[in-house]
Image 1 (tube, one colour):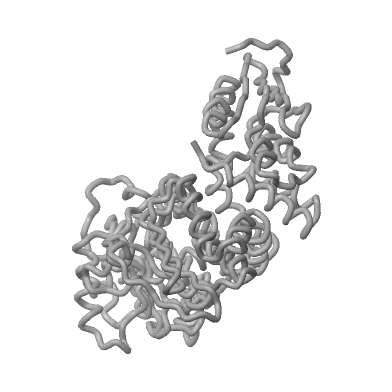
Image 2 (cartoon, each protein chain N blue to C red):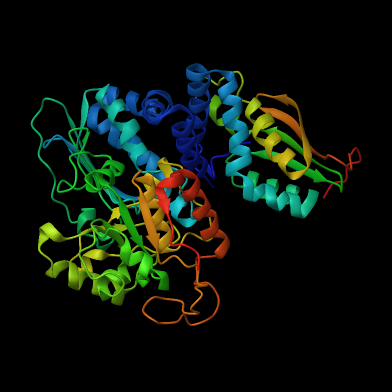
Length: 389
Length: 147
């Protein structure tokens, strides 16, 4: 049977299944109709019965049932019902079990709450979630004066708020993730729009072939590099279009990225990207005065270029960069992905060597080969590797 | 113990897929869920045989509120005597309209998992209590031994 103990796991899987099988709009319909319209009808009943107070009582009961670490605050004079979620048990289940089947699990909450609340004359005045288990939201009765709350328990005052990347909503509407890059609220569009004027892309990994003649002969107008390259300016000395930060990141690496990024004029800064894999502990980029990197998994999952394998290996940063470039649908040249077996005997372009002859933690030859094959199949003749010696 | 209101969503998702896309789409959803989402459980069943299947279900039902299930196994088969189905009980207790094909999800999800692990799934009864059986495809199995 399908139980409730692992519900969040197959809920996540279901969203992905519905998107893959019936299209993007279908999952929004599922959230609005099946979840908001039927499954959670007790909220509708509570809201009809007693407005914000009814919702407060219903959500408080849910919180006890699901063991939510949150605070619900009702201020009827200010026409506001607010929640501050310190640790979402639902997203927490996915993080704990290394699950990431759907492109954006967290979106389901606004997906069902928005339509459900609208049906009873209540509006989500504001909401943000960081995809790491923390979120807040304020509800108000429509067409009545409303005042936002300033509380000590505001999750935005919690250090954990700096983890992850933010989705923001105002008056039921999802806001753009990165307005300097795109007006779209869809994170996949942010990536597409950032690269929209690129005729072709050059992806440079850290392997020795990244500094060989073939790589040097490729157009360098639009380049995707990894964080060590951006920090050290070794494999590529120019200004890259985008930088993929490795998983897991470490302080010296991110400090190096931050040093260069923050000294670069804003108009020349690259797009910072990160995988936000559930198995990797959250990382606070704000400690280095960096913006939250843009996530790459939603686009890769949507394009069928990545399926997360719980507790399994994931692609190296170079291969992730390549997958992203292929997902963007541009002609791609790639160098520096040598699978740790370059003919020179060297491992990295900068001459450094790994601590052991084994593949680095979290990665495997089989995994990288699988994704390289997938990228080749998807891109066809639009993907070019260095010629074999 | 887990939050039983999630059964509301399970029931509602079944109805939505059925009414919006048809029964075939619902069956396809169930079978792919068994095949893909539960691949790790299936692997344990394949490797550990009937003891692993029985152990897995004992652990699973122990986390389901109000479930009353007796599980027995021998080298050829595993029997689940579901005296109180926790999902049906909670949906009924909360006056939810249960889709008439609710129990078929076990046939398809468990059936898909069983096939992938080298077993056949059988169910008799339903809508609150039922008997479920996982029978090894090559060994067959009739003899029951309580564990």
